[in-house]
Length: 74
Length: 547
Image (cartoon, rainbow over all chains, first blue to last red; front, side, top):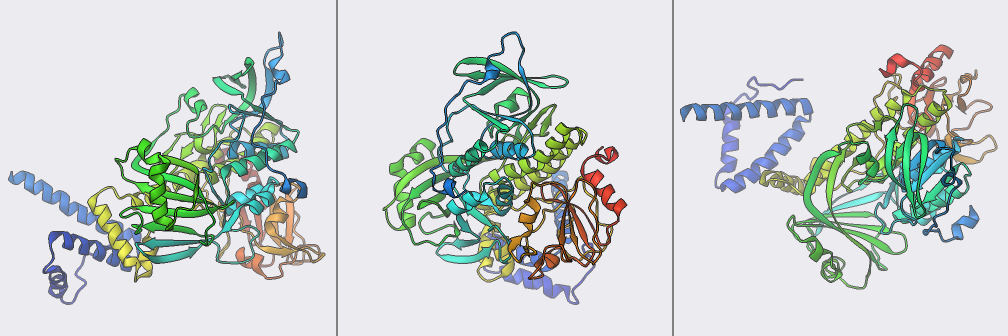
């Protein structure tokens, strides 16, 4: 089963909001700790190494694109 | 072996001049096999080859068994191998048997694991035994075998590969002499000089973290279990390991900082307070203190012409996971039967290539596992440390968190993927796949005596063996293949039904086992032609398969 990138939540704003609000009041350091735990919990729930690898690739591609945009702006 | 049990094993040996050193005008003596290095791997390989009828010269540059406990955990697989070599009873009798490990974080236990949670196995998951005992018992066994010529203080200083042999220059207290060997097996350890002589690389990863090993003698109430701590109260921010050995000796392994000064850290007066904090008392004596860094690396190829590398000379791993000596012993059992066949001319020399293929896979797996453990214990970046912290805290309340905590993944036999194997053609729901190690199970002889499948396998010497489950009519194993039949009038009984269960067997099912106890092929309905084809492939006679 490949990584699903279609919208899976009936209310996507609720999901985004839930994550945003979870970070409220955290320092950057606390947020990073929180994210680490959340990623591990969700990765285990997915329980499919191929899906996890696809997700890692997709996330990495965002970062590379972001860096390229930054360089172009400079 | 009742007599041997009570004897103290010999650890000091003398140099003796050999007639090979007096051959004026005759040229160097020629031998089929010379093994260099009388450690656990070299000794076991020599015994295995000698039991198969080969004449073996075994050279070692020292004249005594090395000091320090060094390797202490010997796996079930290694014990089953030593059973076949006739030395296991003594090892297990002296050793400390264990199967349970506990992982702690701070003051509290995160979880415990059992490496052999089921009955019906002859040998335990692990024994702990100082390496010097293991070597001494193996050296004793060598004395029973006239086929082995063990020469102490014989140091190989030069090697020349020829078309049909290897020429060795050997230095002894009485000067140099020369030997020719058809094959030379380098079991001369991580700092192998033979590896340098063939000009091979030994590439891999060096870890910067330092670890302190202290073996202490004390009487203690701790159970016979492997205890591993992350961030213990007595050693804040780092990891620690406590493990029992025979003779009231305890292995303690403490992670130090990357910049700790080795000479300072190693001084007993500096080690003592650390250990006293851990134990809560200072009633102990030091047996051995050693400071080390990990290296995870391997040779690109284990075969260099007629020189074959086995054990630490070929691959090196971090010690967490007991994958060093155990994987070396697996090298020996993989190589011995193949080399024996090649020397007899019953298989082509290309069969040896499968040693490289199969044991490279194992080395890669061992390096991967031990690198992961090391990275978990000593995170390289702040984010790695953060992820580890998350795992350790999740482990308190979730099963998946416990399973991610990596305090060392202990050695299990690797499964092979190699041209010697015949993939399944039938449907199986369980049992060991081709390329997996055979499983032990309890059986009973016709006379009603209890025994184990591993005993039946090793009885009379290990060879290719057809393990078949009776369906009334006896299936005849091909010529030269040993036969173990479960059930039927003449077969072994399977009183608990565990043999059939562990092999997912139905009446008529059969497994073709290699001399190293690995499954070569399996059949729901074996045919003469099918078994013969699998046998021929497993013996490297199917040349196409090897290329």
